Image (cartoon, rainbow over all chains, first blue to last red; front, side, top):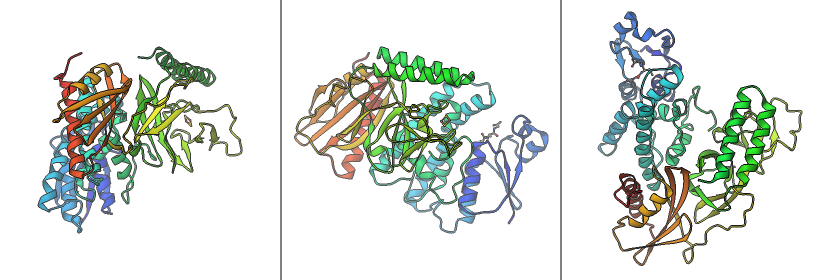
Length: 209
Length: 265
Ligand SMILES: N[C@@H](CCC(=O)N[C@@H](CS)C(=O)NCC(=O)O)C(=O)O
Ligand code: FES
């Protein structure tokens, strides 16, 4: 089945999808969309592909999907025979979904701050940074409790789509002027994430941190 | 906040600016001067993190009284506290990585040994780095599971003595958006759900005794005028369920102080 990712290299949301494609060792083609400065994601051609005018979009044969979180679930559901990346057991599934929604919701404030600082987007940068810090504190609190319980992933004993969806904008936060000083558990989780086999670093994420 | 630290910070800013403007030599001079100013900081030991949170081969950003520091650890051995600035071009060393017991700068890979001296310059492998190239290293001590640093040159003060208890275990580091004074008052006023006897064996250190078995050690780190770190260790809380409950309670302590439900500032 042919997989095709509409991609922009510097996009944290596209990076979510590239990460899982790598972890699952799937081959795919990349269609580079000139997000900046070309704004091709708002072109008529691209709006026909995603009416929201957003990246990423994944095509899997005849199926066309938008939203990084939805794409992660699709890939794990269809291609991960171990079931570990999208656990179905009732004790873990709900928690994974909760943090997955958090990644597509609250954590995206860090993406907004990054768009402001890197690409000059016109938005309330102080509000974006405050919201991102509030979200990071919630995840840091959760991961601190997980450490005490002897665990290192957001849910269960294996990284899941929730870890993959949260990782990019936490790791890239410095691009938006958001430091990691206040989040010791988050910092250690970032380090452990980089040890997942087939992890691929991205520009802006310190390679050896 | 400490005057000399403010001076040191202003120096660091000037150093960065000089480097940006292409005057690397001037940048290096400013940077050295900033290290001297910081050395004039108050002679006291400040908690900067929990030892267990600083894993082998990692480097972390820490801010003490507005000053950016890198807290890092080699493959083994105690943690180190350095100015968060590479002597080469000022890159933050907390972004660096650890290889063979040296902290390597992310930017051009200069490596620094445990004493702070530059030991390798990858672009010039044939060159023995001059002895004068040195990261700004500060005094460090590890006690009660907490990493303490003294940013002054005097270093006559000793790490606060906590009597009696020897089996401290790390609990949690909190970062509270309030001044150190408000945080101290909040720690004293908090409802721990048991009769609490707070004591301050040293400035910025609280010991809370809860009942017969349990003690909490809370050590403050002034971050900025309106932000304070609190590094917490416990004694007598060992079952995982109890430790989880304690961490949750400490999160509530933070939230209560920020909500101003204790004495306000
Ligand atoms: N909910 C989407 C949001 C993705 C997103 O924000 N993508 C950015 C690029 S990183 C984008 O296309 N922004 C353009 C826009 O929202 O108009 C997802 O999680 O995939
Ligand atoms: S700035 Fe650190 S090696 Fe160049």
